[in-house]
Amino acid sequence: MDIQALASSSSSTSGSSANPPPPEDAWFNTYLNLIPQWQSVHTEMIPVDISRVNQVDAGRLDVEMSAMLKEQLVKVFSLLKPGMLFQYEPELDAFLEFLIWRFSIWVDKPTPGNALMNLRYRDERAVEPRAKVRMGLEGPGLTISQKIWYCIATVGGQYIWARLQSFSAFRRWGDTEQRSLARRSWFLLQRIEGFYKAASFGNLLIFLLTGRYRSLIERALRARLVYGSPNMNRSVSFEYMNRQLVWNEFSEMLLLLLPLLNSSSLRKVLRPFSKDISSNSEGDDALCPICQATPTTPFLALPCQHRYCYYCLRTRCSASMSFRCSRCSEPVVAMQRHGDSVSNETR
Image 1 (cartoon, rainbow, N blue to C red):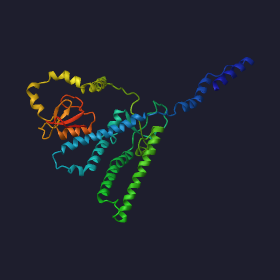
Image 2: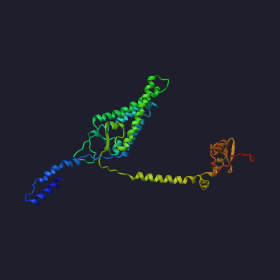
Image 3: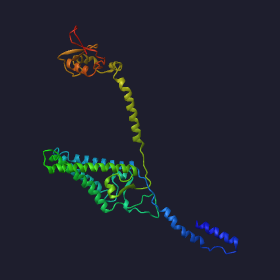
Image 4: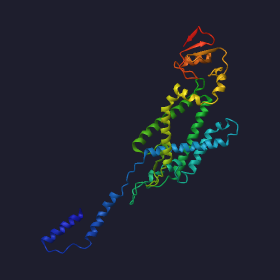
C-alpha cells in the first residue's frame, strides 16, 4: 500500500538524517490516489438470485386471475344463445389479456401475480453499475417499445395462433384428401408448434439453471423479473392453516372409522334407534331393497332369507363375491327361489 510505503520511507529518512517530516497533505494525496481502487471494488453490481418458485407462481397466479375474470364475464352472457360465446372464445381471452396488460405493464405496474410475489419487470439492457448499490435491484422498468412488443407477443400472438389452429381444424387441412397447399400449411403449422415447444423446453432448463427469463418472450425482450422492494412484509394468517389441519385430522379419523361403519355388529347396535321400524318393516320386507319395487321373480338371499328380485340379487352377487345383504349386512352365500324349499341356487 502507498500509505505503508510512505510511512516506512518517512521513518527511514527520519532515522538516518534529520530531514523535516512529510508535508501535511501527504495523507490527503494518498487518499485521493486510493479512491479509484476503492470505487472499482464497491460499485460492482451485486448478483441477485430471484426465487424461481416465486416467478413460476407469479405466472400461475396471472393465469388464474385471467380465468376468474373469464368466468365472471361468461356469467354475464349466460342468458344469450347457448354456444354463441364459445365461437368468440379466442377474442374473449385476448380481450382479458389486453386488459391485464393495459392496467399493469403499460402503466409501469406489476401484473397481479407479480404484485403478490413482490416482483416487477426490469430492462436488463439498461442496467449499469452505480456508485450506490442497494441490493442489485436497481434499474429502470420496461421501455415503451418493450411494452408494445410484449403486448403483441402475448396478446396478439396467442390470439392469431388460436385462430389459425381452429381454422385449420375446421377446414381439415390435415386430411389426405385436401390439396397439397392446405397440407403443406398444416405441416408447416405443426413444425412451428413443435419448434416452439422445443425452444420453450430449452428455455425452461436454462431458467432452472440461471433463474432468469421464465419465457421466450421475456428472454427476447430482455425483460427480467426482479424484486420490487428489498423487504416484503408477509402477514401470514394462521386461520387457514388451522382449518386445513382440522380437516386433515377429521379425514384421517373418518378413514379409520369407515370400515367399522360397514360392519354388521354396528348396524345391529344402531338398528333399535332407527325410526318407524315397526310400522314399515312389513312393507319394506315385501319390496326389493335394491330397486325398491315388488319382485316379479322373488328370490331369497341365504342365510338371512330376505327377499330380492332375481336380477338385482344375481347381478350384485356376480359383481362382488363378498356381497352383503342390504337389510342386515349378512354375507350372502347362496340364493333360493321364494317358496321353493328344495332347489337352492348357489353363487
